[in-house]
Structure formats: C-alpha cells, structure tokens
Length: 156
View 1 (cartoon, rainbow, N blue to C red):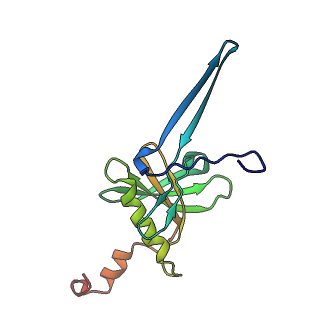
View 2 (view 1 turned 180 degrees about the vertical axis):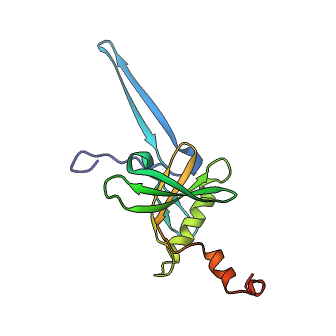
View 3 (view 1 turned 90 degrees about the vertical axis):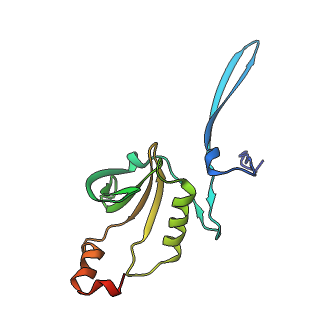
C-alpha cells in the first residue's frame, strides 16, 4: 500500500482474453456491500510496446462520415467532442481480428514515426471493435496517387 492509501494488485500470467468485470459482495449481520472492479489487461507486444485500451470512445468522439472499408475494419472521419479536432478512426471488428493481432499493427505504427506517415493518437475498445485514432490526412488515397504515376505493376 502506498502513502496515499492506494493499493495495487499485480496479476501475472494473464492474456488479453482475461479482461472482465468482477463483483465482490461482503456481508455480515449488519448488512452487505457490493463492489465491482474491471480487470483490463495491459497488452505488451513481443517487441515490448505497451498498449492501453480506453473504453469510453463514444464520450470523446462523434462519428461524422465513413471514409473507407476493408476486410477487417471501417475507417471513419470523427470529431473530438471537446477540441473539435478532426481525426481518422480505424474501427477493427473484434469478431474478425483478435486484440493481439491489432496490437501488432499498433506496434508497427508506433515504430514507424515519420513526418510523411500518419500518427497514432489514441486507442479505444468498444463492445464491437478496437478503435485506432489517427491524425486525419486529407490529401486523398495513396493507391490513387500511385496509380496516377502509371506502370504500377513494377511497384506491386
């Protein structure tokens, strides 16, 4: 226990699938009290990158429009409710991709920081998806830009 009265419980040997909400009920002759706690497993990828998944995406962002679709995800233009900043949010379907797989992508995004690449701003988890909040880039689709060069076969 710390000087401020806070206690930390360290649980080892868990995986991301161990996330849960647990309820404890204490009862005696005078009555009972109930307390619930959420267990969030902090994911650490194989290369040591830590990912903290927040669970209040809808309270911070408003979805504005769909920007694109892929096999596992949908990208939407969103607006931060308090700052009004426009961002791109990749919503990865939890039924199609496990958290560990998404964490690998996040690890790559965090390692490839460059002025010409989008920046990962935040990560959230909703009931149905993993939300990757990234800076918004309005210059168009990269694929269309590459195709405009002509002779794309040699690039692919």
